[in-house]
Amino acid sequence: MNEKKVRATEEWWTEDQKAIVEDVSFVWIRKTFEKSAGFWTPINGGRLLSKLSKDEEIPEGAVVDNTAWDHEHCELCWQTISEFPTHQQEGYTDGKNWLCLECYSKYIGVVSEG
Picture 1 (cartoon, rainbow, N blue to C red):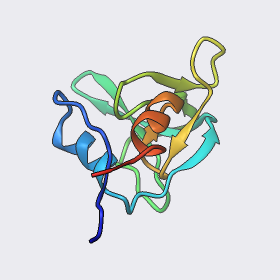
Picture 2: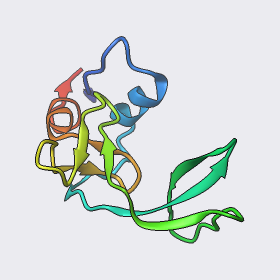
Picture 3: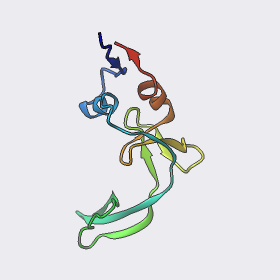
Picture 4: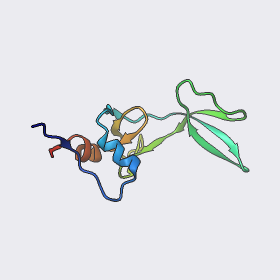
């Protein structure tokens, strides 16, 4: 009989958060966070920051800032991951999403037999 490995989830999580934990196709790599490029788009008298992705065309009028993207948040608990000494400086990423060390250990790194 095949036993299914079950990862813990929280009742209050969104479907996207549950998918991050339950989808075993995600490949997580431990990485030290480094600032990256973003772009500022004028909108309604202000400006909106977006992360610059590979091969992405930026909107007309947007301005690239090579160090604008200065932090990420854990997708599960919202802890800040950044270069700043008061924040966690390492986490796990799949190239898009980030998890803090604690959430990775608690929800991804450990599985139980279901």
